[in-house]
Length: 327
Image (cartoon, rainbow, N blue to C red; front, side):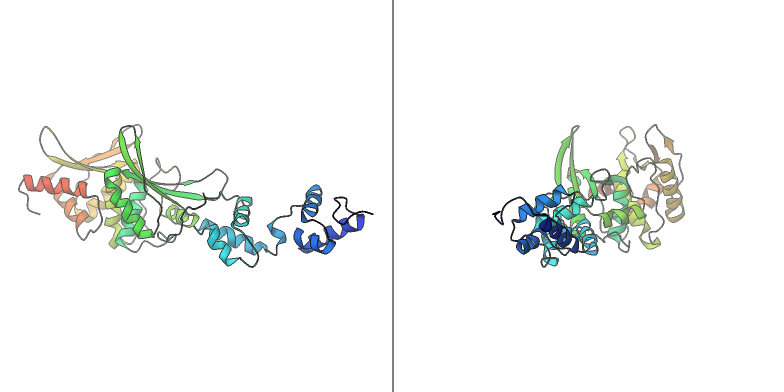
C-alpha cells in the first residue's frame, strides 16, 4: 500500500492538483486537501511548467501593480507587508514580487521614506533653487539597465555639504551623505531612489545624459525664476578675483544654448551686459567683469535669498568691502 506521503502521485491526484492550482489554491492548501507534503506538490507543479508563487496566494494583478508602485515610490517591503498582511506573510514575498516585475530590490535596512512629490510643483524658493542645482550638479539615472527604478543623485564639494543637508531636510530623507576623495578632491554625494521624483525632474529638464543638451526650463513661475538661476550659478557658476588686476569676475559654464538663455534672462531682468560665449570642445562659458554688471548681478541674485552657497556670496562681499563699494 502506498503511503499518503509517498512522492509518487496518482493520476487522479495529479488532475486534482492541476485543477485546484488553476482555481487559485496554493501548494499548502492543495497539500492539506490531498494529505500530501506541500514540497511534493511544488515539485509536481514545477515539473509541469507551473510556478507555485505569490500569484496563487490570493493576490490579484491589481495588488501586484500596487505593490510595485508602492515600492518604486520609496516604501519599504516592511511597510508594504503591513498593507497586505492578510495575503502575504513575509517581506521576502514582497521582494520576489518586485524583482519578478523588473524592479531592482534595495538593500535591506535602507531607509527610503521621503517626500517623493517634492519636485511635482515648483512653488517655493527652495524647490526652484534645488531644481537649478540638480540641473547642473545632479543627475537622474536607472539603477540597472532594463529596469524602471531610478536613482536621483547630487554631488558637491565636501565643504558645501550643508547645502545637501538642507535638501535632505526639505524632502525628509534619512539617507546618509557619502564622503568621497577622488582626483585630489573631497566630494559629498547624496542620493535617493524614486521613479516619481525622477519623472518630475525629467519634466523640468533634469534627465539621464543631459550634459550636452542642458537648457533652461520655463515652466517655473516668474517670481521664483531668479532662485532657479541662483541654483544654476551655485552649481556651474564661478566668481573669482583676477590675480593681476585684483578685479572680480563672475560667469557660468554649460551648453551654448543654456548660456544664451541665461544671458537673455539676466539682460532682461537685471540689466546685465551680454558678452561673448566661448565654446570649448566639452563646455562653453561666459565671463562678466564690468563693475555695474557685478553689482547688478549680486543685488538681483541674492535679494530675498535664504539659500545659497555661502563661499560664493562671500567672494562678492569681500570684494565690495575691499573696494569700498556700498551695496
